[in-house]
Amino acid sequence: MRIPEAVLDAVAQLNAAGFEAYPVGGCVRDLLSGKQPHDWDLTTSATPDEMLAVFQNDRTVPTGLKHGTLTVIKGDVPLEITTYRVDGNYADGRHPDEVTFTRSLTDDLARRDFTVNAMAWDIKNGVVDPFFGQEDLKKGIIRCVGDADTRFTEDALRILRGLRFASVLGFEIEAKTATAMRRQKERLGLVSAERITEEMTKLLCGKAVDTVLDDYRDILAFFIPEISPTFDLQQQNPHHIHDVFTHTLKAVAAVKAEPELRWAMLLHDIGKAKCFTVDEDGIGHFYGHASISEKMAKDILARFRLSSKQSERILRLIKYHDLPFPNERPMLLKRLHKFGEEICLQLLEMQDADCTAQAPEYRYRLEENQRIRDELQRLCDEQACFSLKDLAVSGDDLLAAGVPAGRTIGKTLERLLTAVMDGRVENTREALLQLVRKEK
Image (cartoon, helix red, strand yellow):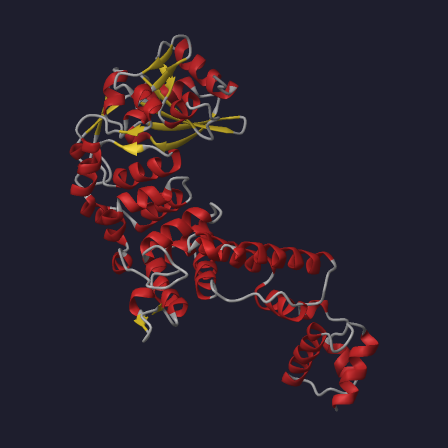
C-alpha cells in the first residue's frame, strides 16, 4: 500500500492522542484496485474540537465542522478528516439535517453510499470491511450499503454517482440497486445542476460509458428528455447500421475521453429526429441536423450550467462536426484560419469517432483523416501563414502605402491573407505591397 507520509503522520497524531483514525472510502477502493489515489479522506473517532486540538500546530481549514469535517494540510497534501457520524433525516434530498457523532467505525461506514466506498484501512491490520466491499470490488459490482431506496432517498445524487462509478470502473450495478435507481430517478430534480454536471462529465469520460448510458437510458432521459426521440430511431441509410442513439453511444465511446469531446459527441446528433426524411428510394436523410443539434444543445448545456467557454467550444464542435476537410493546402489553411489548430484536430477526432460508429465499409475515411491530420501538422510545423498575425505586412504598412484608414485596412488585410492561403502571392512584404498597389 502506497500511503503518503502526510496520511501516516495524521493517523499517528490522532492515535497518539488516543483516537482511532483510518483512510476511508474512495482512496481505499483505489488502493485495493492497484491505483494510486488522488485524494485522501480519513475518518476518526475524534470530535471536531478534539481534532482541532490534535492539529493545533498544523494548517487547518474548517471545511464543515458542523458535520464533523476538518481539512488538515500537511505540506501540499490536503487531508479531509471527518468524525465518525450517523446522519439524520435528509429533508432536501441531498444533505442531512443533522448528524450525530459516534465512536463506532461500523456505524460511520453504514451511512455511506456503496459497499466499494464503505471500507477503511487500518494501518496496522489492513482492511476494515463490514459490508463486503472487497468482494464486490473483485466481482466488479456497484451495490448500495443497506437498503438502496433509503440511500437514494437520503441523497439523490448517489443515483448518478452509481452510474459514474459503473462507467469509470467498468462495473455492473447490482439488481436491487439498479431497480431503486430507476424508482427514485425523479429525485434527481432535487440536485443542483452543478453537481449533476460534475457527475455526468465524469460518467461521460468513463470507459464503459456506452454500456451504462444504454442500460440506463431512462435515467439519462430524465435530465436530457430531448434525447428520447433518438432511441430506436432507425436511420435507413447505407452509411449507418445502428439506430441514432446506439450510433451516438458508440461514437461517444470512440472519441478521446476529454470532457468537451464527450459532451459534443453525446449531443452531435440529438436533432436528427427533427429533420428525418426518406427519399423516393427509401433512403433516410437528416439534412441540416448539425445546425438543429447545435440549437438544441445550447438549451441543454444552459441547463447543465457548464462554463461559457466550455459550452461555446462544445457548440462549435457540434455545429461543424460533419464539415469536410479537403486535403488541399489552400482549404486546410482556411480551416486553420477559421478554427485554429486545436479545434481542427478535435473536429477530426469527432469525425473519426463518427466514422467508427457507422457501417464498416466506410472506415477508409479513418486513413484519409490521418493523412489530413499529418498535413495539418506539417503546415503548423512550417509556420504556414493562416492568420493575420502571420502576414508579412501590418496595418501601418498599408497606411504608409496609401490605403485609407478605417475598415478598409482590415478588409485589405483579409484579402491579402486569402491571397496568401490560395497561393496567389508569397507572404513577403514586397510581394504583398506590390499586390496592394496593383489593386488600387
